[in-house]
Length: 372
Image (cartoon, rainbow, N blue to C red; front, side):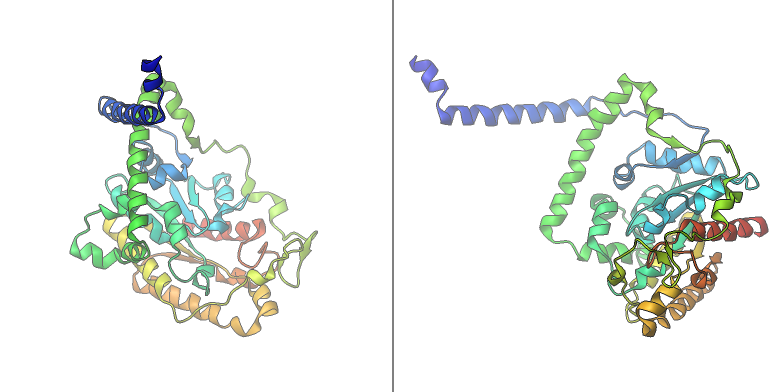
């Protein structure tokens, strides 16, 4: 009884628990060293998009397979922010137009501006050479509450450890490293440590939940990808998208009648230069990595702005002119979609285009592809 009592003392249980935890952790870490990497397999089909965590942590072989699937099929990768997540969007029309040969993959999300892709694309520089990109420049990110780097968005999409270990040359740092440095400046020591630990745990997890899993179940590897399906109908010519929606639409404000958050609108901050610097850095990155980038200079909701704050409308054409001047200066191709700004039915709210707006954008991209 004395032996049992001594063994079950609280202090003894605590020591035993700590010992078991340490031994278990060591077994997991050491065991991971003996699990060979799963190399994946090549695909002849074009992947439509990729899981956000897979991209953030630059998981291989998935990330390189994704980029290579686009290049090998002579396709395009559409990059955008929240406006490019709307159901039935411009890339959907493009993918269903039988008159267009290439297919279109997409990566998009709120705050997913071009700067957050710099660490990922640079780390995949061998895989992205020759990649064709269409990047959607949304003027909403020049407004007062979005015109500076947002740490929460960068935390969501960017792997700090990956970005920290890029080893950019002095020239590369000057050309496209500034957005990354700006992000680093927003992080304190605790946040940097947390991100580093997160990356370490992700790497350990990969050994068991990726490498070991797919070695045991190789047939499951291909199931994680969403591929672009064969064209079944010519959605690009579907009549329901050729005219703006009337029912449930407020034509005075150029928004859905159900949108009640008009106060979300903020005017452009003409004093801030971060978005121009970010765009310039992305252009330089694409040139350095031999990525063929085409840009869409997107429309803004002219009718809404004139109703809500008429005095702020003048900043929009000025800003779009500055963006186009930057693109012209860098001698990169772009599609000017700003004339859609005044057309009714083209927006669902103050900044996200509607499916009809997407249909008009799709036609501009199609015309560009047919005449390039």
